[in-house]
Length: 141
Image (cartoon, rainbow, N blue to C red):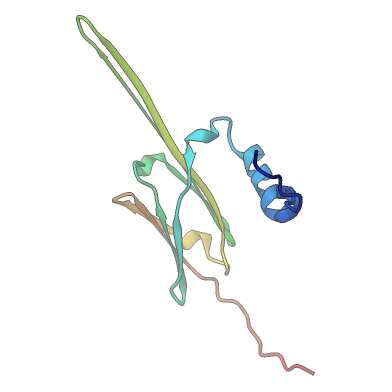
């Protein structure tokens, strides 16, 4: 019998923020959460623009919905495929679905009207122009 580690903390005490984030994710996911996969992204600052590259294998451009504000980009995609074959001595039916969801808080404000998106070889590429902001050098007293 393995000796119980008496110094082990419950997960909530080890990483409270991670614990509550995992709970929040479970409750905010759609009922069919198992179909939604992770979506690796790259966020690239190109000086006067922001570029996002998101990996979305198996998704067609008609399956993607983008929601853009001046400070965030949300990407949602769901693909469904049904196949059915009937023969003299067999019946075959299969359903597949896959999907992705990601909301990205941007480090700078963008112009939502400048956003362009294209999908090529399973990579969604989104570009947006930055909104010029006022800046000032502050002296520390």
